[in-house]
Image (cartoon, rainbow, N blue to C red; front, side, top):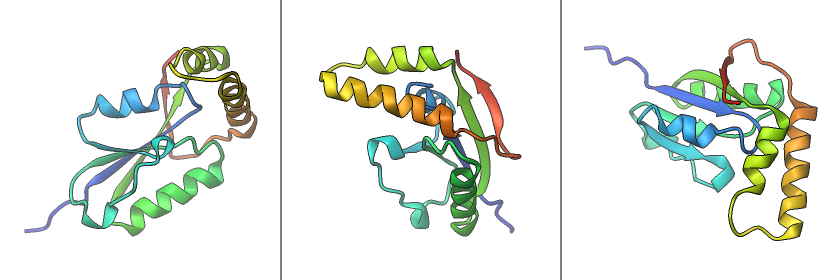
Length: 127
């Protein structure tokens, strides 16, 4: 019997866009690069989700290639939210120093500056 390849749902988007929340909604194991989760793909034989900022087409190409090389069918999403909404969500997270807040602002701005669409990505509007 031929087994279909598992899907790797790749969620990209700026900090605060809701990548982690959206990925958890589909009910599969989630690897969150923003949280430093290790990717244990070689032992994975079921659908999974990956959360990563990956703003540029080149970043997304890298993850699509990694998915294919590790036996997954990549499904690419960009979780889109307005810049100010993303920043507001990031600033509301607990336990942040003024320096951390400043860095978050830079991270959000950097993502929007570097963003380029990928021909395989589907839009999830989360704003």
